[in-house]
Length: 212
Image (tube, rainbow, N blue to C red; front, side):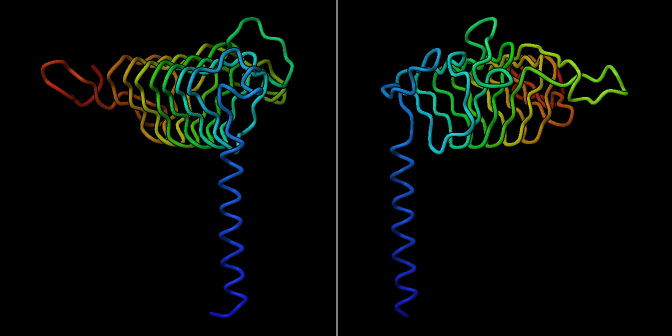
């Protein structure tokens, strides 16, 4: 092998090792000083590196053993230092796993139960633009807010979008790419744009196609 290729391979190995080390060092745990900025930061919880945009941490509660993947945005309000009416605004339960590149953005109330897992690039918000005046730029119109609640034991596939006012029951599966608004019972599989119930669990019979 030519010396130049040998050098390139060795440099690549060194860079990858350094990156792994830096990511390990930059991971935030409950004993780190930064964790004190949160409303709560549970035992065994971790913010994996590299972190995404995170601000107004004092309104964010993270449960025990919850793991937040690389590049995840956790945000409250429209910018740092905004005063909110209550705390926490964003609440993640115990033993959740939030997939890489996901966004959880709260303004009123976003509550995830225990043992919820998401795929990568999931978007969850309790605020959306309004469109009351057709002659005014939409971005300048007063937004609307409605609390979001996701039941314990649920799974959200990659690229799911959870819109304001959504309430999911426990042990709900949301298919990849679904756009979800509204209330759904426990033990269902939902998917589509807009999302609808695809299957539900009926005790004594098992899984049944369609809504209950």
